[in-house]
Image (cartoon, rainbow, N blue to C red; front, top):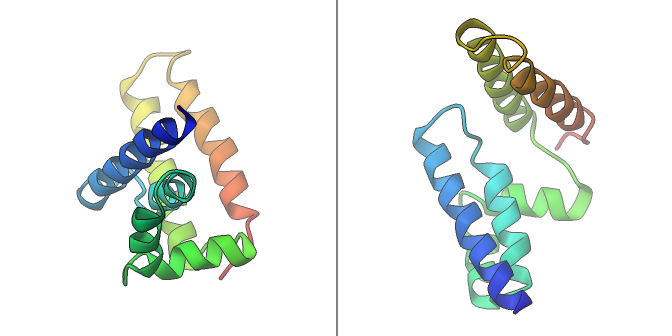
Length: 117
């Protein structure tokens, strides 16, 4: 049962990461890292494919070895958080517009405090 749960989670995370490639407000790398985590618990071939993938391998390895995020990755994530928060503040009425702002502040602070690769 748990292998199936992790396999489904891995594919969902990978799908969201894929959407993030074309949708600038959705980050790709965190979802790929989450997919690698899920696949490590459900499918060694899929995990190996991600860990050896030329585009994702450096990010996954940095995260696994040091819990680090690249400077470019941090900047992209923080820009996406800021853009989402501003859009919510402009187009969504209070108090609902405060939820994305709170998420951006919490998530952005966490990302900012991770080691830099």
